[in-house]
Length: 248
Image (cartoon, rainbow, N blue to C red; front, top):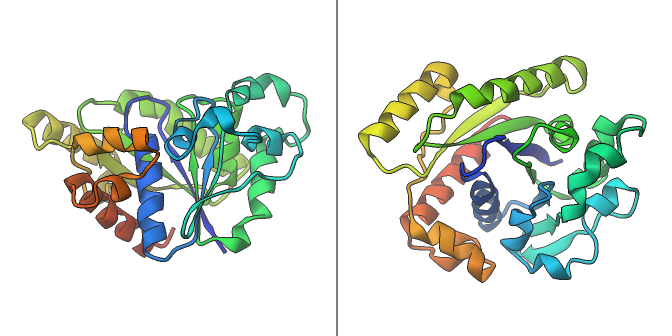
């Protein structure tokens, strides 16, 4: 039965999608069966593996009642793609009964076939993100070491707390990813500020800055396939092992 993990941060540019892609790829190479679910209307996760303009069905269609369109990406790795139409989800589903649980109902039917379901959430705190957090067993927050995004995380913390109290009793933050780490004094100062808030939830593996991570999506590949010997590929392999060893 799959562990369902939402990777979240409503601030953009914090390597959230990059982490989804490469953690999933690393887990798949470890022999874990992984389903990626893209619920970001920008579809950056989808375009990291395929040409989104050629997608015939997406998670949006599944949320409207169609069968979930599962694409096979590579050994042990599947994807449910996104589409720009998902940007209108708040309005389309606003009057639907149990609208917060639409995604959960979809994934509940799929989780027996996977070890992990990893959800890439949009940089917003609307209905789609609420659906992702309602479906998830836990949340991993991706934070860029180059900035201090803690103030903006207050709203995400509040949403996680509200959902844990009212809809999804087991929901919790299982880890914090430090991304784009460059060993600068500024980066270390940011990490210390994050540690004050989240303590031992920060993963031991920091994901270092590396141009390969930005280049890989151009070739529709994870960085583990595009540049397997790079520092960032090494970091994501280590990070995936940490996550795999966790009791979510």
